[in-house]
Image (cartoon, rainbow, N blue to C red; front, side, top):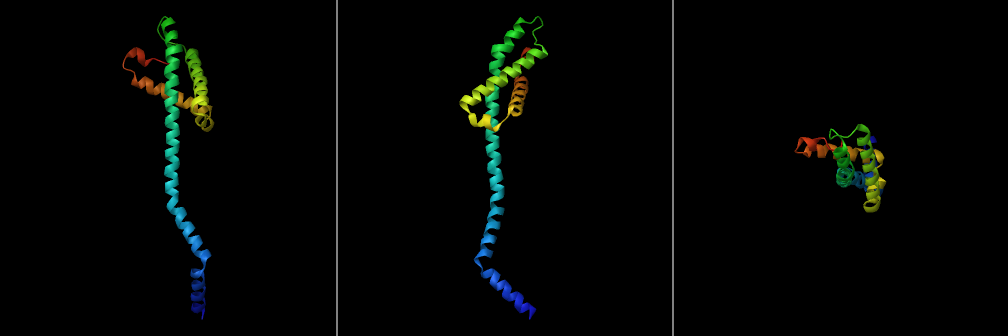
Amino acid sequence: MVLADVGDVLRVVFASEAFWGVVVSVVGFIWALPRVRAWRDSVREGWWSQLFDFALQRVNHTYLIYVQELKHASADGTITTDEARTARENTLQDLKTQLSAEAPSLLKHYGDDALRLAIELSVSWLKKQAVTPEAEDELG
């Protein structure tokens, strides 16, 4: 008698639209989850790539306008730690100005810490790209 009751219950459950709605929703969620994560990661990588490109531009600009002059004026051809810090802060302000004009969504998405990280990574990347010993010391 109990088996007949279980069979009746299962028959009623499987015949219900609510049951199949839940099943389809769960299967759809499981199917969509990795695709949504991949999409989100690609969007984030795109934003980071754009931010890094802007930071590279600003770091190059700061070097050409500010750091190069300081190095030429210096007796040993290097800049001090304070001058390097000032160069990075100038770059941060320039980057924020450029982002607010050209890519406000990036400025809204990333805070000062991420901008500073992009600047530091840009400086490191440019130093690794240097081909001369003098160029290796660029940007502090």
